[in-house]
Image 1 (cartoon, rainbow, N blue to C red):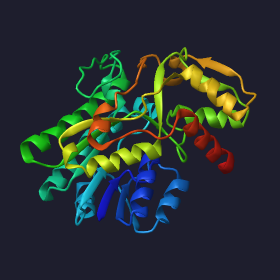
Image 2 (cartoon, helix red, strand yellow; image 1 turned 90 degrees about the vertical axis):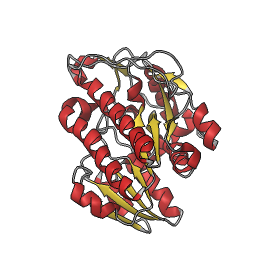
Image 3 (cartoon, rainbow, N blue to C red; image 1 turned 180 degrees about the vertical axis):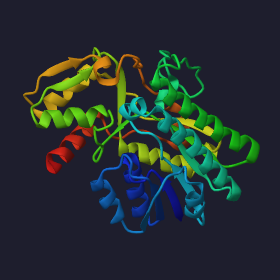
Length: 321
């Protein structure tokens, strides 16, 4: 097939493009390279059957030409990472909402199936675990930039479901939890690559806040498997799915585990959130998915354990550094 992947030069996007290329599909990557590393861009360009178009999903004219002739769309282009969201809230909100609207509107003209990537951030302050797709959520003040991201991704979800209900556009929404693996960078607040790189240099492993916030980390290859299965299943159309690992861990324990796996001499150092993200920053204490819906519909089940995932990241950075 001819498939469009927006944000295909990013971390998750590059793994998805690699899988599609390996499957023999022709892949068009639309990316503005704003958060893509040059190493990943160069690597994606060399994949068989892949064409890269530099540009933004906000450029409707370019997007129209890029979508032409495509049979599927994986929409991953979005603001990436807590750091970027806090520093550029306007850009992040517009990229997410206006970009997704453009993709959905143009896809609807030819009824091209779309997989839209959302985020676990949409669950907000909820502490009802594990998170299920139909649960209510609570957000904080609009003065906090963090919640703008959650609201923008929620808006994306409403848009996608509205196109399905009113127009019959085949859409699938996936809420991605913390996804990690080779080629991910720590520049925009991703905790695992940041800790691994610090450990390789024997620098202090910096932990934001008290370290007791709970997350679940899944291997990017497992997440890509789920995305492919969901878009190619008609039973998934018009539905929202959690994709991630149900295996929870505190950030403090994550840092300790990375230190042991690397046999690093680094010390653990706590840093208050306000010193990293400013006075208005507010974090979510817990994010753990219920993945039973994706398992029931397409048999989604993560194959990589947390140790497997961390070892893959450590091996990648040992070689690249």
